[in-house]
Length: 224
Image 1 (tube, rainbow, N blue to C red):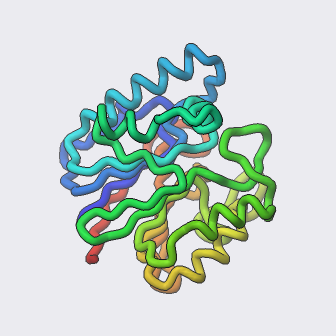
Image 2: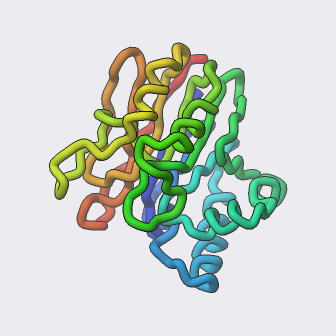
C-alpha cells in the first residue's frame, strides 16, 4: 500500500502538484482551512477545499481536522452528520476519533491536541479528557493520524525552542505494539521524518514556519 501524506495547507492546497504521485491512499492531517472563524467565510473555505480534495485521483482519501478547522469543530459541537455527508457525496473518509480498515491495514484518526491559545479541538494539557481520547485508539492500530505530534517526535517549536508535542499521546504510542506509521503536522518548522522503536513518524506540514509553501508531500509504502 502506497500512502501520500499532506498537512497544514491552510488554503493553499491547490499549489500542490500530485501529477507524478501514484498512491492508494491520500491522507490530510488537518489545518486545511485558514483562521477564518466567520461563519460565512469558513463555510466557503471548507466547501472549496472539499470539492478539490474529493476530486483528486486517489482511490482512498482520509481527512482529519486540525485546530484551524473551525467549520469541522462547529459541526462536531452541533452533532452534524458531517462524516456521512463527506463519504456519501465525495467519497472522503473523515475520521474524528474513528477507525478505518483499508486492505487489511487499520487506520485511526483523531483531531485533538493539548490546549494552545483558543483554537479548535483543544483539550487541557495532560488532562483526563485528552487521555481518554488517546486511550480510545484501538490497540491494533497500524497507521495513526493526528493533527499534532507526540512529545519528542518532530515537535520542536523554533520560537519556543522546546518540544510542543503531547506527552499523553507519546505514552499511548508506546502501548501500540502494531503501530507502523504516525502521520501528523501542526508544528510547521518540524517538517520531516524519523524512525523510533519500529514506528515511522511523518510531520508533513506543507507550509513552513513563515507560512510559505515549499514542503513536498512524502510518499511512503506500507506492507500490511
